[in-house]
Image (cartoon, rainbow, N blue to C red; front, top):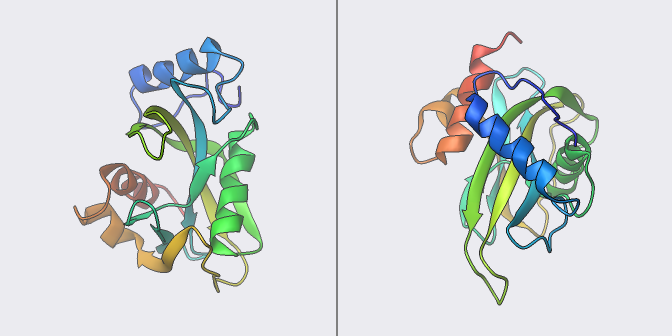
Length: 173
């Protein structure tokens, strides 16, 4: 698995171990059909100046989130995060950092006959290096560049998104 024993700064050893245990539990843990849950990859997309992040207003969830999606069998979750960022934003010239930014396990309730399950989301920092002109995909109502400081401090955002933004603000540019 992509993150075998990787130290993830700022995360408890317990959450890292939870992800490692899940990865070891089944060869199908990156498959969408894996019943208890599956891995997903997502990207906190930063502007070239590291001051803003591009968020998607998710069509199904009706909230602002980072781009991301299912691994669909791909164990390279870094590549999954980059692919999803490119597909959901239309940005070109994105680069993904090698280190994991965050891990988040969240429950997905039953929907349209699909049973409830866990998403084990492995999150990476992705940087925009070229044009910041985005294209809204079918999965979004909107895309917007948000000040990173606003995302880190505004409780209207998802707590895990706030946590990632705060981590980025603490890092050297």
